[in-house]
Length: 73
Length: 177
Image (cartoon, rainbow over all chains, first blue to last red; front, top):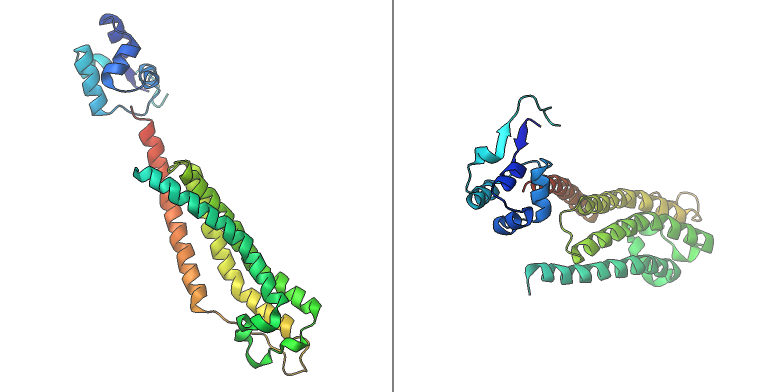
């Protein structure tokens, strides 16, 4: 997929574990893991909002568009 | 008590009711053909050609087998309906199986309704075959009950279709975090 999820990098940068983020955002750790690997169809604005609020970042810090990635892959 | 709990309780009742109907249907049909003199009101549609005293045992058995066809289809459908209520009882509302089971019940109801007038026509032949020539009958009879059943089956088919789409939407929704 051309949309790349950089949540892993942000978690390292902010020194936060997936478990902590999951607790703050209010979704399961499994869903955070799926999100990190980009194996989701989409992300709700409410989830994105809570992630940005927790990690004190912008949506663009988490999501990026990479034209070289295989679409739908 | 939450709505889910209420649905689960009602579904358990409906599931038991389906089993009861599945057991009672063939027994009632058997009773009709065994105690023919008292229950021949169910064959009133045949009219004057019906003479209960002339119907020999093999023809009664044949009549029972023929009338069992639409009943068996309905029983098969009711078993699918029971499986659907069992899913509801377990609080499974949006799985692919829900739509599939409702579709199968609707299809069986549809085929059972289509088979009913054919079975009635064949029964009329079976029970009048021993009448003197000229008094045998083939009675084709489609009642408002058949049309009602066809309508209900079509409604269930449409609902099953919508449920399938609802499942696809629920599946898509589940892939959003």
